[in-house]
Image 1 (cartoon, rainbow, N blue to C red):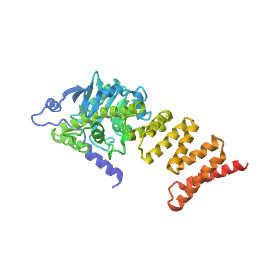
Image 2: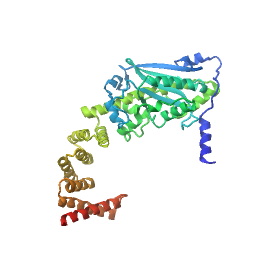
Image 3: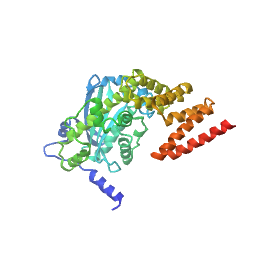
Image 4: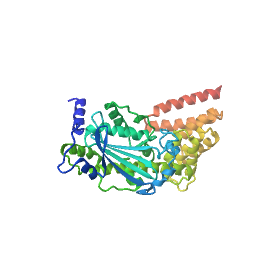
Length: 414
């Protein structure tokens, strides 16, 4: 059996076909809605169950102060997203989106049977959950989502760029509707979280971050991989008991999306204002500033880090190199030179420092003799390393250093 056939069979096993409304003896659709803490709504000739849950912004989600949303400016989220959203992006105006689906693999046969939406309304964060009693009611769910999108600016999700938004776009297309959801600015919390915490907690799942960052351990939750089967069982039998846990899971995901967005923005605020976050977070934000070509902010952070006492030698060496790179980017050549020379004086040999100094002496300070000295030193160390423990890119580096040495010798002998 080829791989395409196997994937189609897998999709069929997890994605039930549209079914009529399940009939559990003694439980009407309105009783089912009450069971989920919601109400029945008619739309586009179909019936949906909609549950609304309000969270006061004066409250806490674990140890996260939700009122700190006021400090979560768009300029901070722009930094955290590496310019994927603009400085006018606002958590107050965004729509938070999380889906529960009939299959974890996605694809045209996968339906969104529970759509979780979050949005700020006055001084509350509203979690709205839209449930399909039958898959035939999907057009009504999509129509309601479109209405919510029209009243909001921007989307917040967790891995939505890879999963939720492409899936919802597919569902719009399948229903011959215009998929405008992918036109919105999109702050993906997962990507921003990975830049801060990817190596800290073993994984970067939503519940892991919720536990370590927000200080919450869920009670009564259900594993995400079990959710498609629970809905499939509901469609076959009408049994809805386990679905209450699915509603809880989805509601917590939406609230945690807000909490993590606030915590991420807070780190960037603290980094640029007071440096009162962990050393590791400061370093990662500083490196992000370098990647985003914001060397002034990077230099400020690495300068603050270097002023701390009792630093591990490797950390100080790394931060000196980053500080030197930021000064180079600002064309502060003398400050960059001092930092690279400090690396060599305090921490022994460094290929990066030696090569950067060679470039600086040759091209900016017109001193080919010092440039040659740095180049030959790097060559000696590289040739020794290649004889003992060669690394993958050593041959390319060797070629570049020999080329630089020959060029410098020609300049000196001219």
